[in-house]
View 1 (tube, rainbow, N blue to C red):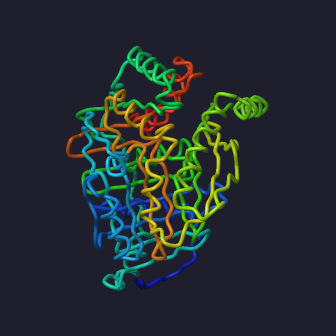
View 2: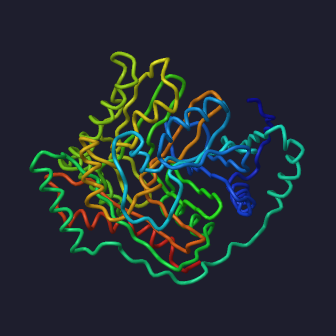
View 3: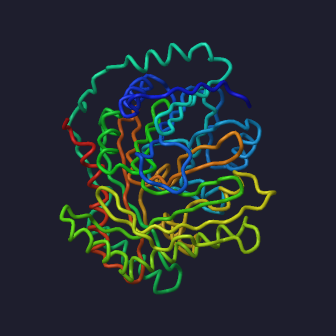
Length: 432
């Protein structure tokens, strides 16, 4: 599909981005993607906004990937949206019966009327033919948007869905599974929530994003559903016939003292437990990529490299492959989903254990948000460090977790969860 493209220079990218986000808040559906200028080897733009719905796909998990495949193949256009974790029920003979108060659709994608891409100091506007005459009006409205951010509506009481004691009990059960050989590594997550609550989504997202400045931040709205994400992790990217996956496993806090911070990097880099967690997932991703790769094309470009963010250092590995010509973009996604960093290994047996031990349905959390280009390339993150909000039900939720292995110390795992939860709790606090 062809679009009208207008390219203009920006005098102040930061200011224009803020105005763009404020301008889009009255829309029913949009996705904002922000790299926060984090240095990346693989990237197509610094920021993107998709707004307005020309067509959409919204459904439950049943045959969801086949529906998405037909949709993407038919449109051959920019398509933005998310895959929820519970699409595992489409890829395997699994089910999800845990508690779900958020009630997001299992999958949602839309073909936007307008796409804004920011590359360096330039803005590209990709408009559908039906709204070309709105370009100049939109630019004027965006550049003249001086709306002041509002405070949060009210103080928020955040509760954990399970207690610390219950967490330890569940870790004990998972480690029994590990000793029996049912699983080698299990990513166990727990939910924090607030009921009868209203939040200011833009203010909350702005605060959450400022805390960590991650490379895969997302602000998504569809009617009453919001996703506010400060994700540092890429699930998978397609550039032509090259596939890139960058799982994260291994976390340590940062220090404001430079020498101590360097020492923490070395500690993480050489921690046998953290490295073993990461390497297990690398093996799983290599196996998943091999399903669609040309012979001998699966490579590990980086193994357990330390990436530094504002709050934490993390171990990230980069695995690449060359995809076979007869594999469609969606079928490639399906072969990799859900991502190994959010399940564990072996994948199917571990997902069954996860369903037994977790009490909340994951939904969009630990799924993926991203986009397809008209050429069939794509890029998807992993939905972590994220707040989900159902306006109609006045329900706010976020989840955190970590990889459990035979070497895991339950107390340390719980502390890692509280460290990860701190960013979302701080973003939700009623402070300017």
